[in-house]
Image (cartoon, rainbow, N blue to C red; front, side, top):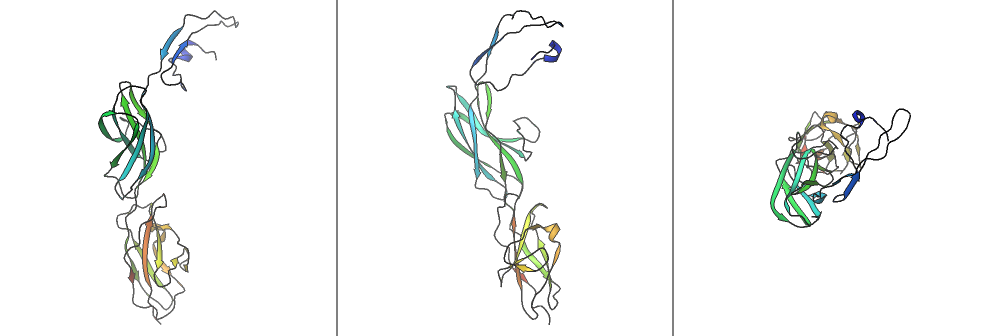
Length: 253
């Protein structure tokens, strides 16, 4: 690959192996394609930071997760801290010091092995990236980023209103969940779920509260009491338990 000095600039060389000494030398050519001999060799050794893997998170709640990682190689250097970073999901790699990055750090002297930490004060039903890290005298070694969701909150009991001989209105009460959370509405006496068209079916149908709006549940029987409960899920399809139930006497004759 040929370029001018301006074109080359200061060139990062990527894809190298940690702890290996690499030698480089340069030759030139003129506009006629005549090349010089190579100049003297200059060398450099890639520094060794700890090798770290990010393991799947566990123990998710509405506001916390347990982050897990492992130091797989210290390269015979002292590892003096380890921990985790997290940030709003971007599907891109970030490091300590970048905008939006928060970290939890354990100080000490560490060898290879797994470690964990609780990441707390998170937002209900939210998507994050998490990376494990460890440090030695040469800097930070990071594991790959993973995707983590906090759990949604259990919804409050729905509102059930306006009975007719064959319909009722059902409204979801989100209970502080964000707009992206999805909900399924179940009628308890039949075990069936409200569908997009308002009928009852045997499969849970999921939509956001905004899309559900106040739903007209149709094809009901007159003079019959119907009871409803709601559950929520996050973007990882992790579901809550059901809310408390709500009913409205009986549909009218």
